[in-house]
Image (cartoon, rainbow, N blue to C red; front, side, top):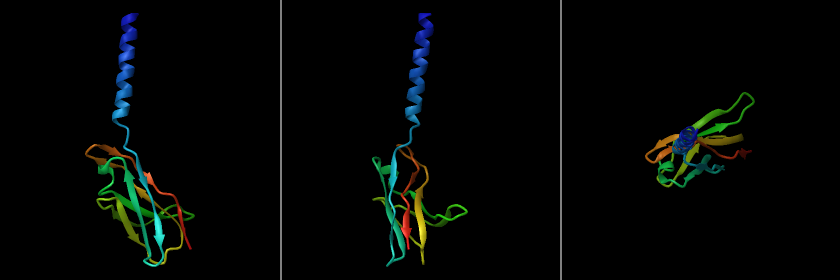
Length: 117
């Protein structure tokens, strides 16, 4: 009985360790709109610099039939990005899909919604 308990404890420890190894690195994403330049812009942030630079960021418009892609960009080394959308009007949000970095899997991120009128 004691051997069974030891084996179960080891298996549980290995399972928890495996889950931690596959946990994605947290990522945040901001979005704003500048009506003068007609550009959405923002920043990808993370505790791991590998999850900041070179991230694809997509800007979507919310519609009654679902999100519609308006454009995409790649973040700079500091995490900044920008997408030009002429004559923008409505509700928009940005998404940075999951990304495999050198230090692990970078989590997907979604910004808050920004209203453009």
